[in-house]
Figure (cartoon, rainbow over the protein chains, first blue to last red):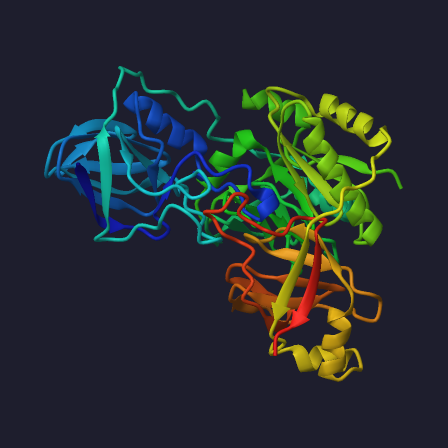
Length: 292
Length: 212
């Protein structure tokens, strides 16, 4: 059995798989990778990856004690294998004692390592995804952690799958559950203004800096708690917008002006603090056409 | 008011029965949730009853919003069968919460009267949400209504009994909360290894009893 030793790990490094959908009625959101596309690409590129991978943030160093295929993708990190520079994204076959070091590069908050073997960890409600808010499933990783991997999976030759989403441009949204509770002026300014990604971000949500004061005068509304989906943009009582992400609470009572569409949520998750973000409303039909 | 059908992102359709919480709106949501599960709507992956709404999470590759909304309207217009009775649960509570005295005072009661009034009638499980196994129970009769606290407690443990907005809630995992802490219970509504992982379902009946 191959063991993987974590030598260094940035904050919020966790195990993720495709997620844990289907348990909202029990108060559990689906979790899963912040950048689903990157997670999937890394898996496809191996040509036979285990369902569970590592989501990392500000860097990751690990070594394996036996042969192990791996691929990395997501954002733009810098990768070295035994000190030799490799391209990003990348794939390789590790030998015993090989050391992989990943450090932050030009852009992105989240990167993924997938392996040509299963990471052996118990499933919780059918998934190995770490839900950081509910403290459920998977696990957070720290230096010194050792992961056990099962036998090597059968692999076929696979070309690198291309990322399809455009890297630039506005973040597209569908008007939200409470959009009409906001004044016409606030809605117009929400579309016309630039927001800035704040430094307070995690798997639950990303705070935005409302530089133009779009929601400065938004009245604190008393709303009945209702269903939340990933990408919902809620406005706190003090006017702070928060984009809710994969470990969102299943329900919430803050007004939601819009929802980031699925096709743009991965890209949004990769925006670093300080990045400017503009929102562009689209129809549900258009958003769904972009998903296929 | 007829229920409102609105998109929640590009994979969600929300059927909303009211803008504020009432017994009627909650019963309508629970009833429709059950019918939606029984009907097996096309492309629907998950049916989630909330306090006054039902979320349908669907796969747009299988069904579009407009077609699903049409199916939902058909289901809404069909005569509703009488709701099946939910399960009955008895939840023993130690009424030793830090906010018990303050809540009682706000309602002009002494703590013992508050507890007696609180436990007097059966409550309905209105919804599960917010956190694993977190249930909202209600609605308490009119005088038993207090607003949430101004300050949020960063963490209360699982098994905390909370009170606000005419409802009693039970936590199953540690959470932050702005509700009043009135007591604690050994009853745990969440077990990840059990199927289903929660015991209380929306529409069930809950009775609270005082554990001395």
